[in-house]
Image 1: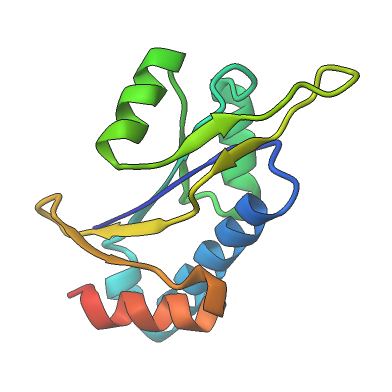
Image 2 (image 1 turned 90 degrees about the vertical axis):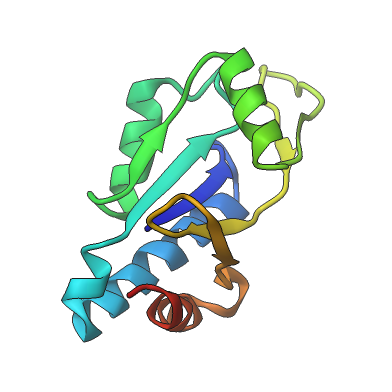
Amino acid sequence: WRIVYFGYTYCPDICPTDMQRVAQGLKELKAADPDKSGKIVPIFITIDPDRDTQAVVGEFAAAFSPDIVGLTGTPEQIAATAKTFKVFHAKGETQPGGGYLVDHSNVVYLFGPDGAPIATLPTDKGAKAVAAELDRWVS
């Protein structure tokens, strides 16, 4: 089982919130059913490879849980992966000082052991809803 989320580490709000809810949902599932939670690998994939190096993505993912795998790649690899997953992303206008935001979809996907898409996780409803949805599907 895989949880897949596309975001970026410099995101000021939604990415850290979604990742926290995923991590908390997994923690709640682990407390209720350690066997199920042990079958799930959560994955964070950056959509901002220019700033999100391997070290940066790894640190970001680990801040939420040591179990979250953080992935980055070349801009071309990230663009191809995002396209495969139908993830919208667009770099915003560069601000004074060089910073920028990245607009992107924020869907948390659940894939089964065979790689087939199963569901989206309701991070907008909180960690308990994430745990309940994982409990519903993971066997």
